[in-house]
Image (cartoon, rainbow, N blue to C red; front, top):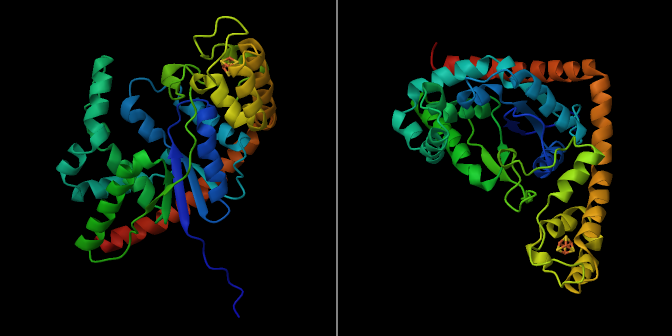
Length: 333
Ligand code: SF4
């Protein structure tokens, strides 16, 4: 019997470096951590994607890349179990993007559902993003994915259109050059919990309704205090409606065992919203304490972060060089 291990199938995912992550990102990271057990996993900061819309404001991108990776590691992503790299360090992504651009009909890019919506969204904010780079965004994303010949890509179900674009491109390339180089990656849909923001809408930086993974105790207290509760409750003994309360939704995630007693106490008017918020603040601080501790340790040893990225970039580059050799050969370049 052979002792050689079968190579693991690969998965990859990335995030735009938009600064520190918040609680809403945590369940995505939990999913990444779980995938590392079964797959060869690559995770990258997508800095070239950031400049498709942020081309006029690049001052913070380098720092944001660092902060995003610190958040990943602080949340428990083990660099020994995956490859963490920066997109722009792997120049092969740009070459693949260019070669794919030669075989991609313009209509494929123009019909991407999010394209027109985002152009309009930025236009309303007074910004024109109708650039060549932004139109080609899904193509760059397909190159990021197909470079690692992955089995799957962990995404939210709403993002399957992006994976479908990569699958279409893989089929077109394989057909045109009569090869079986590129797989058709699956969307790996995790049960990602959608966390409400402080105001009850989806937690998002653009709504300023988030709690950072790196928030200190005072900041957590301040943010919980801003949470929207049942607006009909004026006095402590008014019967409440926890089902419409953001604080209650958070108790369900971070204080699961107490959710039921809090529900009953609220409905009977036996607990005030202030007390309820303090209980949640304690639970959130308990949850964030080990994340903060890991962040503090990483900040004290910046060399460790550099080493992790150097090793991740090296591993990603090896795979990228191999894929590009095969791609050029298929195209007889
Ligand atoms: S007591 Fe708690 S669950 Fe009830 S409305 Fe106030 S904050 Fe919400």
